[in-house]
Length: 168
Image (cartoon, rainbow, N blue to C red; front, top):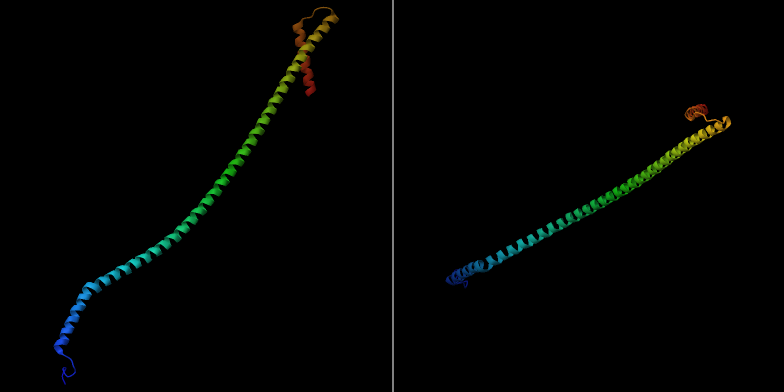
């Protein structure tokens, strides 16, 4: 039994096979190859897009964490500045109170010194007036002029002894 008996024409089958192989080679060269290349490029672009999306998501997450850290740092810095301002205000207030206290003490000390000077001046004037009065009284009693210099020395000595006696 031959191939012709089965209804197969061998030369025609070979021609069909050669034509099919040529058509397959042409289709592969001009259709499948560019189509496969385009599909490979599209697959690469999709992979790139997915990688970029992953990177963007990772960058967004790290940016979010960095932003939160910066916000926390800014809050800490703001709190530190507020604390420093509060401390500076307290130091200034305490300094001003100390300065006012020192000024009040200096004023009181000056007032005490002024009072002491006035008292000393009044006592000196009183001594001088008392000495003059005593000399005048003695002159009238004795009705004669006394040595004024000797009496002033005598009065000063008596007043000094009286002061020593009063302190003692």
